[in-house]
Length: 255
Length: 305
Image (tube, rainbow over all chains, first blue to last red):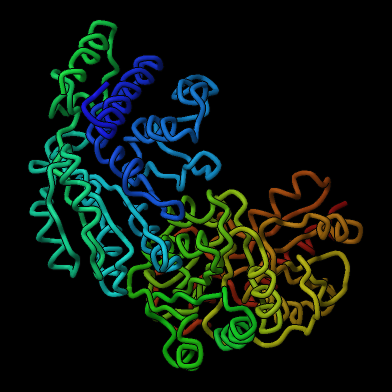
């Protein structure tokens, strides 16, 4: 067992991401590992019954599936059908409220605007949207950022998985989005920058009350915990072979 | 048509607090009253149409019934993916209203012409498409769309259309005037064009049909008409690709010995500044041009051995 319950959950999410990705021989692993800590804090500490969560960065769906399995929304059989022929779960999340899938994502730039609509329509509830730093290239995100500030959507929180990588290069080389926190603040949001793998910092950021919409810029590392994936663009794509899988399993035990 | 739309919508909003109008910063001289009287059911989303559609999805997930309004070309083409994924794939109750469809914004040039909106919306699974011809059809279509459990698109013209009829209940298709041999099938502004065309074809006595529901298309009207008609001329202020003409042609494949004749705008950008009349003439969509082509078909058929 890990030193505390939350880090045990984060470890299990990481392990399950590796297991199901190896099982189906598919990629998108680094992107999922990047958000494992954020999801463990969100689902095992922050989210209340009526709160809503949308994983806008769809390619990290394996992390969400692993989390929903640990929350007993989906069965082991469903989880291990990830990306298998006739499987229940694909690379990107599909809308299915019965198993806790709140919205279909995969095309970037949709979750945050939909989240604004939810925040507007459900004033007593809290809405959490997880986007990637690269996703902020999409103009629709900034339409929503303007909207949320104008309508003072204090029940809306955006978590930016700021790992500095995107599909075909480093974000600073492709289309630099930094400084993200400053941009959100300029648009009228509260912005808090945290270490996206530090549970305490994440928890504190989530409980910080705000009348304005809140952006938590989570500094993360893609492929976090796996030595040969850390910060690498390649692992947006590659599946693991047996040797790599065993190495990855060993690596994540050292976190 | 905009005034008929807002009259009907105000009535609905008065009775149903779940309904909310979202506008992409349009509605000058049309929405002021509603904005004043029902501020909780009015939202100007700004000039950000993609966001407006996604906001509508979030509102619909929260139990509201959003009605999104903008110029037809902006609210269908610029927002295509938001409509497809956020609204349609989730089957969220919602209504998208495109004003100024077709060539309504004749002098505003090609950015404002909307000649592909029916085609685009048809491509989305389960999307319901309404194209009313006059004020009464606007009211019936809107009321129908509001009560559906999935998204709809309503296509309006900017200008006032002459009243065609006063039906009490919505039908997928209305026979406006009964004739035989030639059927003129119109939708939206095309219905009044068809009526004027028929006036030039008095000897032929064509049947005139208004088709306000384009998807799902009720093919029974074609089965009924096929008993006494051989020529099916469609009239719409929309491109000839993907609109009513395409729909009817696709259906007629299954009915032997029937000929479709499609009247719409050609497959080109209409780089022409002018009145609505001028642009229709330029596109070959005026009663005179249409009636000549129909007459030619008619005479060819009658002179066949």
